[in-house]
Amino acid sequence: MTTDTESLYRDHVLGNYGLPPITFVRGQGTRLWDDAGREYLDFCAGIAVVTMGHAHPRVVRAISEQAARLTHVSNLYRNEPQAQLAVKLDALAGGGGKLFFCNSGAEANETLVKLSRLFGRRKAGVEGRCIEVIVADQAFHGRTFGGMSATPQEKIQGGFRPLVPGFVTAKFNDIDSFRAAVTDDTAAVLVETIQGEGGIRPAGSGFLRDLRALCDEQDLLLLVDEVQCGVGRSGTFFAFEQAGIRPDAIGMAKGLGNGSPIGAVWIDDRHADLFQPGSHGTTFGGTPLVCAAALATLEAMEEEAVLDNVNSNGAYVMQRLEAMQADYPDTILGVRGRGFMIGIQVAEPPAELVALLRDKGLLVPSAGGNVVRFLPPLVATRADFDEALAILEAGVRERSPLRS
Ligand SMILES: Cc1ncc(COP(=O)(O)O)c(C=O)c1O
Image 1 (spheres, rainbow, N blue to C red):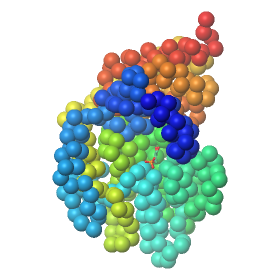
Image 2 (spheres, rainbow, N blue to C red; image 1 turned 30 degrees about the vertical axis):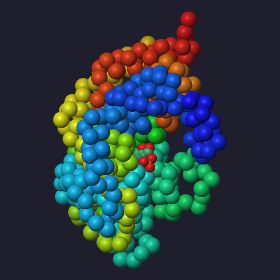
Image 3 (cartoon, rainbow, N blue to C red; image 1 turned 60 degrees about the horizontal axis):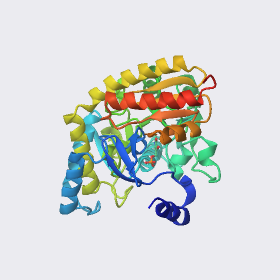
Image 4 (tube, rainbow, N blue to C red; image 1 turned 180 degrees about the vertical axis):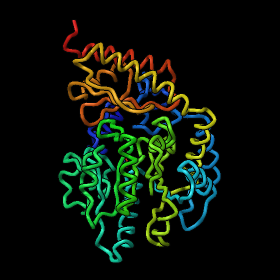
C-alpha cells in the first residue's frame, strides 16, 4: 500500500509540493491514521482547516444528507444553504454587509483586490488610476496572480514575473511605514490580522486601529485577510474583533468548511454595490454541499463552545511554551500567537525538527522565520496539548546544542 501510493505520487502527481512523506487514510477528532495503521496527533489540521476535528459527526451528517439531496446548481440559481450561510457570516462579521462565496483563500483575496480596483475607479472617476494596494512585508495572500503579487516574497514571486501591478509594500505593525506608502493612487490596504505563513505575527491592536483611522482619513478600503486566523482560531471568531475595528471587507476560507473547500468574502454594504451583475463569479462558489458543511461547522462551533476552549487552552499552552523556552533558550528563541494559532521560533530551519516530531507521532507545519506552528483543531483538549508538548520537548531536547 505504502509503496504503491508513494510511487503513484512520484510518477503521476506534480512535484510542486515535493513528495509528501505519509499516506493518510483515516481521521477522527485530533487524530490521523496512516496506511500502516500508525496514529498521529494532528496539530496541523490540514493547515488550519479542520476546525472541529476530523470526521466531526455533525459535519459528516450535513455533508451526506446534502449530497443525497442537492450538490450543485451553479450561481445561475439560488440554493438554501448559501443564503443561510450568508446570513450567519454577516452576523458574525458585525452585520450590514454582503457575502460572496468562492473556493479558496487565494480566490477570496482575488476578490478583495478586484474590489479595490472597482473602488479606485469610482474614486478616480476613471479606470486604471488609483489602483495601488498597500500590503505588509512577510505577508502571504495566496498563489494566484493577484494573491502572489500581494505577497512580497521572492520565494513566492520568483519565476512568475511580470506580476499584477499596483502592490506597494510597507512594514507590518508600523503605521508610519503604511502612512508613508499612501499616494494619490492608493485604493486600499490589505493585511492579515495575524500573519500565518510569515511566521505567526499578530498585528497589534493599536496598529489595526491606526490603520482603520488612516483608511478613513485617506478614503481607502481596509481589507483584512482572515483566511488563516479567522473562524475562531485566534479565540474570537475573527481576529480583528480583538482590536475593536470594522474592516471594509474580509477574506476567509480555510477553517470555514472543516475541510470542504470554501472561501468567502464579506463586504460592507457601503461598498458591496461595486460588484454589479456580471462583474465577478465562479462556477463552484457557494454550492449547497460546501455551504451545508460550513453551516454545520459553525453550528458545531457554537454548540461545543469552542471559543472558550481556544481561549483557555490557548493561554495554557502559551504559558507552558514560555516555560519550555526558558528551559531551552538556545533552541526555542520565541513563542507567539493567539488562541490556537501558535508559532514557536527555533534556532535553525525547522524542517528537521518537524520531521523528528512527525517520527514521534506529532504533525506540525512550519512557517517562515524558522517557526514551527501549532494549529490544532479547535476541539483539541488539555490532554492533547500535554501530549503535544511532551513530544515537542523530547524533540527539542534532541535538537538542543546543550543536550547531554
Ligand atoms: C493568510 C492567508 N491568505 C491566503 C491564503 C491562501 O489560501 P489558499 O491556499 O486556500 O488559496 C493562505 C494560505 O495559507 C493564508 O494563510
